[in-house]
Every structure is written in C-alpha cells, then in structure tokens.
Image (cartoon, rainbow, N blue to C red; front, side):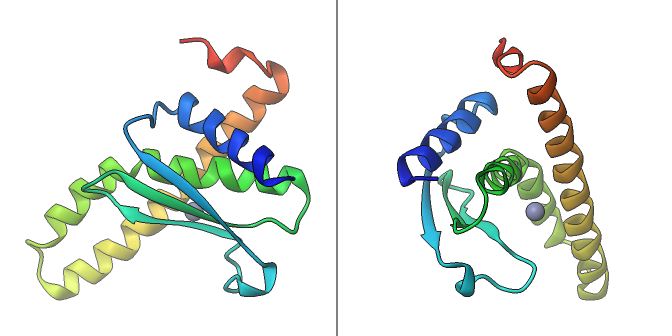
Length: 132
Ligand SMILES: [Zn+2]
C-alpha cells in the first residue's frame, strides 16, 4: 500500500467513526521496529484529541486495512477510556492495577468484536455502512 492509500484508508475510518474532531496523523515504521505481537498502535493526547497511528506497513494490504480499522476504533473508544482514567485516580493502588488490566483487556475485546462486525459488514455491503 502506498502512503497515499494508507492515508485514504485512515480518512475512510475517520469519517465512518465521526472522528473529525480529532487531529489524526500516521507514521510508518519498519516491521523490525515493531514490538513482538504489536504491529500497530496509536499514541496521542486525549485532552487535545490528537492522535498518531503508528503502522508497520511491510505486510499484505488487508492487514494494513485491518490495523487501521483496529486503531481508529481504539481512538473512538478513547472517550470511554478517559472516563475510566479519571475514575482510576480515586482508587487504591492495588485496585487501580487490577481494574486497569481489566479495562485494557475489555477494551481490546470490544475493539476486536467491533472490527469483526465492520469487516463482515464491509464484505456484505462494501458501501452500505457509510449510510448516515
Ligand atoms: Zn488493540
């Protein structure tokens, strides 16, 4: 996938998820820079709605598309995560660690479920899920 195609795919998900109030950029990394088990991630500042999607792109196009969908869904869920991060501060350190790992696992499962649902919807109606 060219950089232009990657950006077009990111823009598609920005629009589908209505993330237009976020400033989103992306950064290409080489596969060898990726942490084991992590082919993409996002970093950012929730307060300012700024995010950078970091992608290993020396892989098949469908994987790049899947990773973009996955990371933009994480950004879409960040508003919920922000509520949790706020509440987390009121917890005792032991509880905080446990709830933090529970939150992270639940968010990952939710993103994966939504990814599969969007992937299925794209297969049966490639243009249909853009309907407002
Ligand atoms: Zn994830």
